[in-house]
Length: 124
Image (cartoon, rainbow, N blue to C red):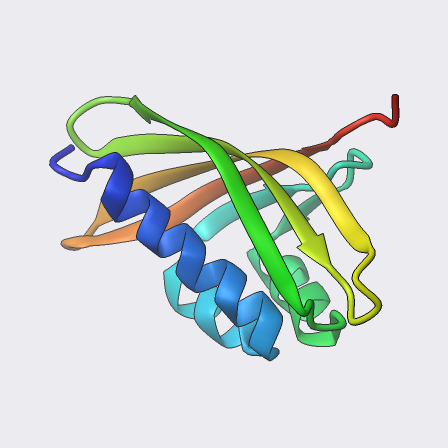
């Protein structure tokens, strides 16, 4: 896969910015593969249509932080980005703190999100 960590990070930032401005369902509707899956930190597995419905109803975040990104090539047509993330509400409190992984595949010339998984970080 010719994409780099920077290419996948840019896609992830676009998605996180969409979560902040309330357009996540629109953005991910254009990026997710038809058979994509989302695995939430509580173990719930959503298909594409379920995930888009959840995103459409989600409260926007005020800001986010991504850290420790790692790139994993999965062959000539797929790659994963693994990172830590935090999202914050209007009162400045973190509403999400998790390890994330996003698997992208090339389909008809474009990168598509095939699998997104999050693991909530445990409090110390």
